Length: 312
Image (tube, rainbow, N blue to C red; front, side):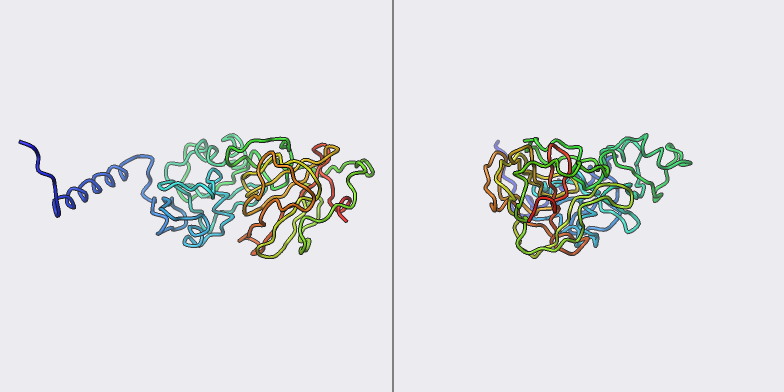
């Protein structure tokens, strides 16, 4: 005799039973810690699960953590492609993620030097060296560790600007040391270029910081501002980079490159030909600075150039 279809209350009971079994199975998995919560109940220090309609900004707001810190503690999370069911680590108030490292990381259940190193794209030996006296086999939950980064900093350096990859988030480039190209070695074409923004103020000039790390120029602007190409050229990169948000790299004549980072979204694609003044990206908002900031970098043959030598 054919089975009768389950209807009404029977179907509801079956659904609830299956949901209970599934939830019970997840809770018993060794890789699903007790601190996993839905993103709608985000709390610092635990893991949250992305729900339909969630954004990184909304999750950060509910967890009461800066968006930039949330992004840095989840370097593999692509803000444009959050997946339902994806797990994100919510940093605690004791944790910090400076752009150049080292991070302050609070140990969670099940952590090892190796697992922490995998999360932040570094090596366990570097973490051990940065925490002398801490026994790797006796990590304590809540213990704060220094986590140096293998590729740290927000300076666009050490990375080939000729990349044409569009395969999602990339590792942050290593910081450049404070060695400038000799004066007067720029080609004649690198003169009187316009600034990438119409309305801006320089909040960080190009130059070395207190540690001798060369930092690119940082420009503050207004909401809705678009950065424009400073010269004719070809887009060689238009995608995301870890810690740098959306990034656009344009190659110009005479082996010159311009870089536009911390963008909200690119307005061009790899391979596009652009003219001087063509909008290349929308400037993004930084919750850390509470401003709309553009990180702007110029390079000649891969070497950093002070933009004030070229821009009019």
